[in-house]
Image 1 (cartoon, rainbow, N blue to C red):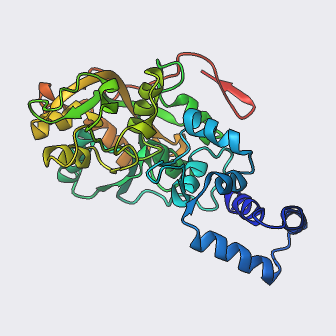
Image 2: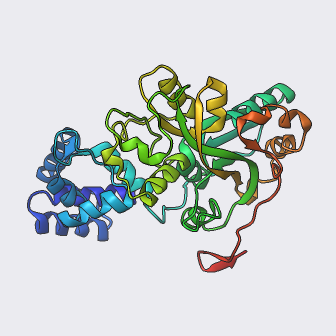
Length: 360
């Protein structure tokens, strides 16, 4: 609701800025919900019909000056494209970008129901996780595990909103050493329990034989090379954008940068089909589809669990699988997985502040 109100305020700024802002703030501060019909019509027209925003319009939408828009593109990943020769901003992607960067969501109004055999996992997509869910369902007749592919940030939000028992995440922190904890601080009042699922190798997927002679991430800007990408809010996209920035590259100069696919396997299939030349992904997909792979780094892929649901029977049964030989045999050694820490609790490397308390 907070985000919705904020967007309404910014939308009304298109015309009589002061008048609409004062009216909205008045209704917000006095807990009234009645908005004049003429303002509703203006808002409805702008919100429903304007799908692509200009630089000036997105500046008004975000309530910043136009110079700041260019900074947000280069430094904060504001979704934009120059396909028409000038910057345009898909409104739906801008709204998703705002949601990804929004802090202090209100507490969920409902609680996850008591566990009765349905285990809900949401977050980052991974082939080994999919196989483990199938293993769980085959081994435990009275339990069912299901997965929601929401990306790492989506998984954390689902866990915060009590929509799942377990969130899978691999969000690299600014220090490029630790994972997930800094992002959890922004989402939760109380740090969830963190259990390592695996470590896996991230990099670039390219066709067999490497016909475009791609050897590193800088080659993606060469003429004639097209890529596909992962969505904003995924750990793979976060890593890819960070690597581009480290190499002084702009995603907007790479053909296909805004063409997003929700699963690693979908990126791999685009490359296998010949429709694209490269994409960020994990070694497991390269092995599965017989593609080539340019490594970037090993990463930690964790399961995050609210502490009040940690001892739910389904959660414990699932975590228990991670120490069994049958789990460790699900993927071969060439698939880019390190299972040496699977099933072990993970703790931040330093002090973190959540709310008004500090945790280690």
